[in-house]
Image (cartoon, rainbow, N blue to C red):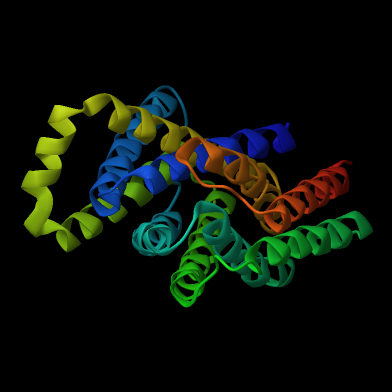
Length: 280
């Protein structure tokens, strides 16, 4: 069940990233997507709270969530910059691969996650695939720098989400509050362009609404899997989005190289090993 949730989350994540990469105004689209995702997650959180336990059991879980929201704001900023600098596949490679390098050892040390042969082998295979994809000519300095910054923020919100969920917080509430923090931070950064962004949404609302719903669904599935699975394994398995992103690149006019396809399939092989490593 965890593996299925993560794979669905990975595809949806790659889908809305492909949509973002194809847009001219990536900053404006990114802001609208995160705002709509926050609204969607808020509705889900309210429904989940009715007749159920409190979404946040204590102050500590709230603080972890607020900190995760700051990381989400940094993630969306660095993602937009990275996608403006280079193609979808290499951006995914640097950000996701870098996050694995940061999260996997920390999650083992901080959360006492077991280290199995399947887990080690799967992680190594995924990392090899990510390196293969990122070694192509399309990975320039700007992609590397913004992708590395994106990786730091991904690792940050990932670990903070895990801490909030481990403290008993509700997954929809964690995501809704986190994005409710990230949205005004990014809106403040784009305050001089809010009027133009609003007019663009009113002129063509359907793509923005769809992208926001897809983004929200992706992260909610991810949080459910993170709540029930190990932080390092869930993040690594979610990097099957690299394969999905490589395929979706064709839909937005990009042509991934043979090296990128090889790396993408290595990622899938590693993800399968990680899935086996999670089985009881």
